[in-house]
Image 1 (cartoon, rainbow, N blue to C red):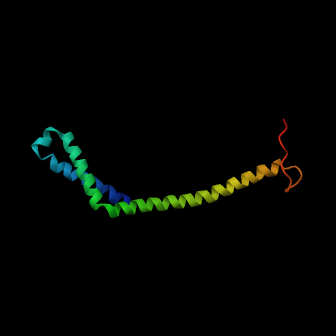
Image 2 (image 1 turned 120 degrees about the vertical axis):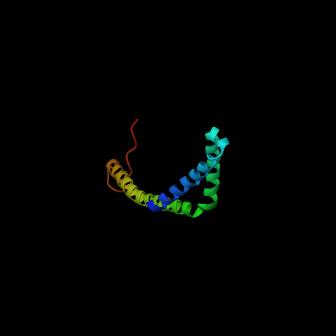
Image 3 (image 1 turned 30 degrees about the horizontal axis):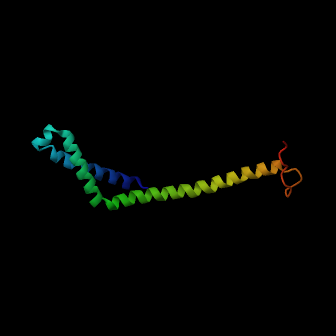
Length: 108
């Protein structure tokens, strides 16, 4: 994810909320009930961002998915190799007659 695309999306989302909030607070009804203006501004901002901010959202989420996939493949490879080495060491430590022998059964 590029920081620029996340920043652009965040600023646009804030503007989609703050501009309608400012306009609504100009009306006398909403000056007496500012919480109602905030609710309407949130609904308007959600609607505007759903309609017009699809491309910036796709850039941000695509970047996040790319980073996650990159971390998952890097982490799996390193983690799997480490786990496999640890398991091999345990198996080798439990064998008594050589590499092809079966481990001893636990004694009761």
